[in-house]
Image (tube, rainbow, N blue to C red; front, side):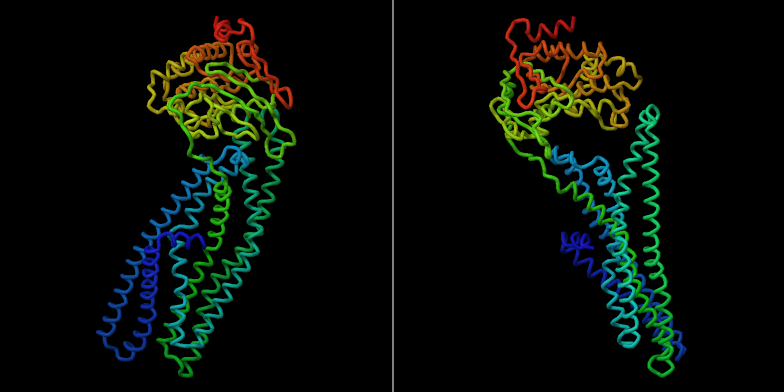
Length: 564
């Protein structure tokens, strides 16, 4: 319920309007009980048709006004809730797109996916209808106050029953809280199994991984089913109580009220009116109690979003340079992941002149991808600095800095959309001819132009179905579109065929001739021979650095040998 109050506090004037609207809605709702009292007491005793017509016409006017006010309030609530939902959605996307890379990677992908899906849950749970029900709840006191003037004794009975319903409902919800948390964890685990079954066809077929996955899946389903039965039992008690309380209220009002009529404390009209008032008061309270399950689901959904919202944000300000030469300096560089007992590398410094070529070697897990991410600014060094033209890249404006880089990650991914949309993401105004020319240079003509769709070809499943070698070269096209001064390639020839390797080498040759500074993470011999600087991350903890001395290590000539 705190969520609703926060939304109302964000717009004080609208909150006042909604409160006033709710008051008049509930005040007009008194018309039905007053109508019953007057008809039974005045019309039946006097039999004057004009009296009945007047009373009926007045009641219909009150009902019409109540209907109109409810419609207006619902529209206002809908506007308020949509604004708040939009803000939450923007915050969630900001958390995923603007948080620090290292912090975001600590949260499992399934959890992030579930957090985004929770936006729909929040929209349903904290919607306009529930807000209206919450605003009506306090006006149960208005119906009880009028009931008190009719019969203090019946008012006391109604209050006692309402309080009993509230207490039992709160107890049942308290009992279900722990089970609900476990159910949420089981839901996340189920999502992980579902993802494996849906996307791991080769894994299941070739390695029979379906057996252990099925065992885990069956166990999860059994535990979820058991937990669901427990929750269903608790919720059934609460729902049955709500249903039974309405009938019980009518029985108590009519039974006890009949005695009051018999002894002369009430008349029949007042008894009917008292029954309507008590039922209205209980209905307002029950409506909020029925929302509690929905609100709890919304609260858990907000908890998932809070995990993302609590992540540290990547800074958005910083220095930009009018032109970048590409002179790079690694100064006393060290890096260790949180909880890692020893650093991946430390205390190494190396200068790279503008237009130079550096190849970083080492076995899997040595830190090549980590170094690439440090250069791109996705990670920050544990110690030391990375300087570009004498400026620490941590001082640079992140978006500007990444536009200066031709970056090829080790495992490139795409978003679901057309090929053109994916390849032009760095420069949306790039022409199709430019994209096609880059594709031809990287030996992708058969894949792109050989398809009837061409650049309109649709990519699905983040590009996972595209062969590795083609996916790598498409990602390189995407990177080259930005025309950055610093080229950072992480294992560019991994999974690439001979033709593709030759095409990548030719493109690297062009980048070298264009004066770009090139950093390549690779164990390929021709790459190492072409390097002016070779960094071996396999030597721990201080990497071995080899500076090329002889003319045979000329960058262009070595790469051109591969072209030939």
